[in-house]
Image (cartoon, rainbow, N blue to C red; front, side, top):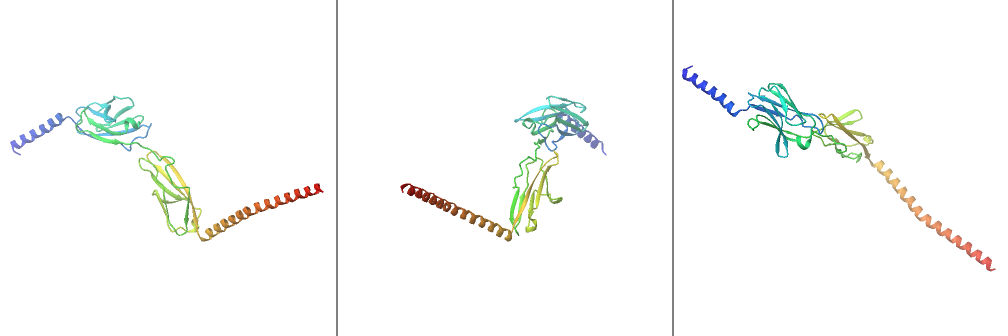
Length: 268
């Protein structure tokens, strides 16, 4: 290697070191995990690459402005809180974990920043979302479903969740599908009375809700029986409607005749 080449590489190395010092930042990568659940403790991690020059700063969202909540020293060995409800620990020279002691969607949901120094060079951001669900009552299918024999049925069990829920449709002890949509095809009369149950689970929050429906299958015999019953009811109603006035008329005539007989006897 020539002397001039050695000098060039030394100058290049010095320039890179100087550039890093002037720009003053290590690269960061922040992870908001799966978001935060209102009122619960929530963690974020910041991974650091390179030499920390000014110290690691954590900033939370706050209606368009930024609030500094934690800062760590340049040696990346100690962190102090600048806002109540927030703390951070140095897991290693290259990772820091920040804890939101009680997640408040009003101030903690949105874009978080982890960066070397109070300015924006080399900063990393992540979007902190609100975890929730499954919300009770958010499954909207009916508790019964009536279907003609030979037809198909689709029932939607989608619940309101973040992160998205996992689903399980079961019939008795048998799992049918892990999709929120249950498809029952070519329905037969022997499926009449089947109870299908859907469970929606948030595996992060470890919460779940379930709902079931009972299948009613209609077929010619059943429809005829129902029609006969309906006809019988109509006939009975008509007979009563005609009989009651008739009985009343006969009764009224009888009362009237008795009154006339009494009047005639008194006149005699």
